[in-house]
Amino acid sequence: MGQVDLVVAMDSDNGIGKSGGLPWQLSADLRHFRDITTRMDHPPKRNAVIMGRRTWLSIPSKFRPLPDRINVILSRDPAFQAPEGALKAQSLTEADHLLARDPVGFDRAFVIGGQQIYELALRETACRRIYLTRVHRRFDCDAFFPTLPPEFQEISAGPVLSENGLDYSFHIFEYVPLPASGAK
Image (cartoon, rainbow, N blue to C red; front, side, top):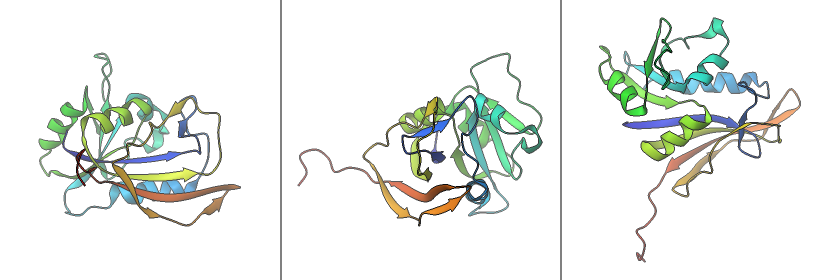
């Protein structure tokens, strides 16, 4: 897979979901997500969102596929058929090949969940940036974002905002290679 960015909202313990959904309601975060994943550097190319099957199913059906983006669903289940308006891939590499064949081309690719897909993206891709919404509370989650590798340095931290009694903030982390061992 080529270069990707990750978009994630997590609680104070890196929790990202519970029973296939988000354990919080933050309309500002949904707008932030939409803005990040639809903003293009090179129109008319579109951005792509890459997600696991469970993340796809967690999106309310009236919002699927996510508009104005190429939707790619990762699933190893051969019986799973991508619905109209979405593509199915069995791996991030296959997703990359599908996107490369898009007639208009894609601008940027965003991995949007869930837990296993984030783990794959951090391990198997050239992950450039992580757009993180930090919800400043602990929730009873059953899906978690992996520990950030030390190569990701925070380059932006927004102010603490509040909605529905929840404090949250927007952060951006960028990949910065660590110096080679033994370097001074």
